[in-house]
Image (cartoon, rainbow, N blue to C red; front, side, top):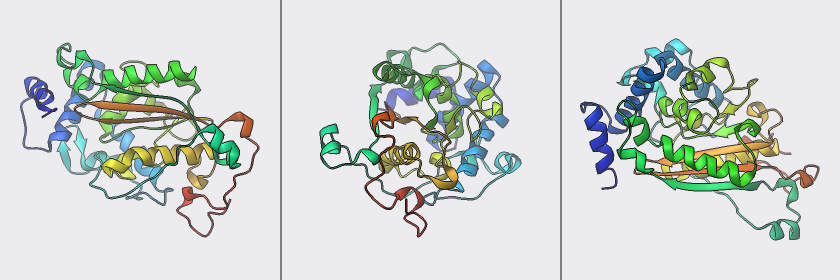
Length: 296
């Protein structure tokens, strides 16, 4: 299969354990990050604490319980350093997005709700995946290089960079992956993902709000629907429709989605400034779960 070489790289670096295979990939990448950069179990757990806290205001979230950092750390171990509350669950769900041309938007008067894709890229595994330096090979196998290459492509297309981003939905299948991906996307310097989560700059009131939906860890991970659900959340955020989970002054959104084996897609979204004062044509937002108070 497409993962045969990935498994060989994993097993060359770490002995195979009687724990879930995907948890071994991402947990062992976390172990390598800890050894190379001094990242701590607490910092990984802070990612999960944040995402569970964010999901409390998402009506679509699979879980809405807010946990303390100690509760995250003390939940059952899955694969060191990952505990149960740092892993995405088995989920069921669906998502949809309407993609249309600017001509269609203008023709039907939809400018008030249109969000523009200003950059999008898909990359597969880089050559470095199977020839990485000892001590970072599992970090490469889970997609660090393809995410970094993909992000750079998107930033070039959009003429924007990580400092222009306000809100991010990224593939936090496990807490270790979210923290490592901070660095691949340029949201933090290499080796400083732990500093980003500790600084408060990955949540409300900080530089970025990362996974306001609760992410895969708490919103849920319905596989095929995961990426489009990220798109929906970012579109709602850029329209300013998210109520209690709304990111203040959200202008630019960044989406990261991946699959081992390996493929990464990154998309940058922006609310067109020329239509910023145009009211939406529809009366109800889907951001609040189509509740009675969801009228715009």
